[in-house]
Image 1 (tube, helix red, strand yellow):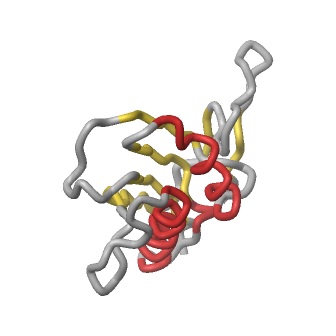
Image 2 (cartoon, one colour):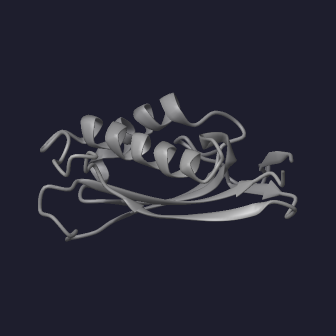
Length: 133
């Protein structure tokens, strides 16, 4: 199943690790991944006060969720990112570049005031489309 990155010369090129749009033939299994935070399997929070460490844990959690469904990070076609401080944009995308390769998922990032824990700096949910087996 081919995932393609959609770009347009009529749009400014993304300044982060995402595409304007992602096209996928809808012949696979959709997986909707709930918002992942920086909580480790033992329940502790990784990287309190450290956006890089938290983003890495979030990406590891996304990876674990999509793998449990039978896919890989390459199957993720969309992510929604919620951050406490938009000034962390560059640091977040530096970590995302370690996990997501072209064709990149479509993405939205928004700054919010509160999360379920005051120690969370980031939360990401995702949609993946897994090939039919």
